Image 1 (cartoon, rainbow, N blue to C red):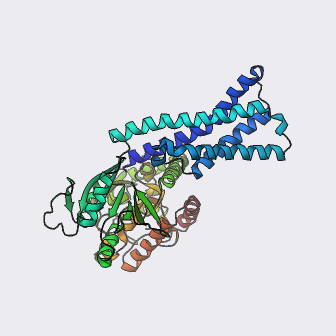
Image 2 (image 1 turned 90 degrees about the horizontal axis):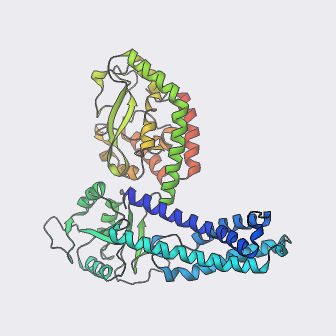
Image 3 (image 1 turned 60 degrees about the vertical axis):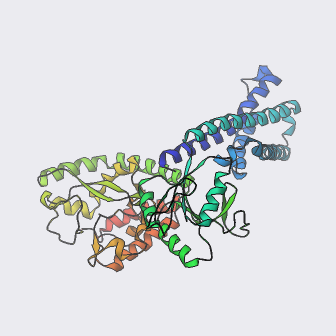
Amino acid sequence: MDRSKVLLEKKLLWAIRLMDMAVPAATAWIAIMAWQPEHFWLFESQYLLAMAASALLVGNVFAALGLYTIRTLSNVPGQMGRVALGWTGVVAVLLLAAFAAKVSNNFPRSWSILWYFWSLGGFIAVRFVVFALLSRWIETGRLTRNLAVVGAGPHGRRLIEHLRQQASNDWHIVGIWDERAVRPIAPVDGIPVRGTVDDLIAYAREHSLDQIVVALPWAAELRVMKVLKKLWELPIDIRLAPDMIGFSLAHCSYSDLGSVPVLNVFDRPLSAEKLMLKRLEDITLGLLMLVAFSPVMLLTALAVKLDSKGPILFRQTRYGFNNQRIDVWKFRSMYVEASRETAMRQATQDDPRVTRVGRFIRRTSIDELPQIFNVLSGVMSVVGPRPHTIGTKADNILFEEAVAEYAGRHRVKPGLTGWAQVNGWRGETDTIEKIQRRVDHDLYYIENWSLFLDLKIVLMTVFTVLRGKNAY
């Protein structure tokens, strides 16, 4: 799903969660008004505490019961049992807590009964409203998810036929890819065969894809592994369809595609919830950095302008998320005649292309500060693999050719700083060993991401910059 759809879905799910949390509070007020209207504005502390506790419990219990997914919310009858179970459990916990605190007598029985049933009705009403909204958005394509199928043979055909029979239309099959498609292959059930797996990788760079399902016979182990190895570098959920539709994948990590169980091979490096958390982190840290470093940036701009002729800022095209090209901004640190949009040669120690001011701002990483605007615009993160200049080489070999896993570092947004940089792999990468070590650290970061790790890297960056090692 493209970023606009992901953001829309996440906003919708959080809005539903907040509505659920608001239901117990709202119905508590209504029940008080119905039971003792003269106390409507004079809530006692125990009622306020019950409202707050119920709201927090509802949000977490309903989430644990899997009630905040598009698939679940699209099936109103299927939610009723879990909603009733979850709310009953919340009330039971509150009653036990009130009994243990010896305040249960402060809550009239009539008020408690009204609160329970009116809240239950409120949860159900929310789901009918959400169902109507989801149905409309799925029908118009606002929440439709794009699916690619690998395999134009019998397994792929059977998978497509089965999906076409499903009542739900929230999946859209955008095309089929097959290793044999070096020659034209006829469409399958009206769905075009768009090319080979390599063509699929190129397609995924330019179009919105939510999931790729590999529908190949499992007996063709080498063929399957070759395909999966190629697809690994994409920041997309990769699934393996079973040989037999409906085959039980007990004891395996699997998910459902319609009613088809598919084996989970690769997941996106960061789930939608983690992406949202990381984006909030980027906005918060980015704004704080902008405020803190604004005086430094103004002085640097003046120094660059006075030191040598040319523009203050330098724009360079680099690889970003999903191997897409992005424009990265820096303070100009080289003489204008030596600056190129895509520099093929990295800066080296005592590089004659670097200006007097440039040496200082490169050593202190001040030249990177304009990338705060890249972070705020959403094309970069505060922490992530550092974006490399397109066409740079190690031992006269392109980075992507020198290290097989190189493209895997583009499964997340590039960052102002990263795990490789704070572990000593900062600066020039003139040998294959150096770029291999940097990629290894970047992949470790992607596979072990957490908010704590990001904050740790930010703090380590301060000491790394102060040392100025390998920065020139």
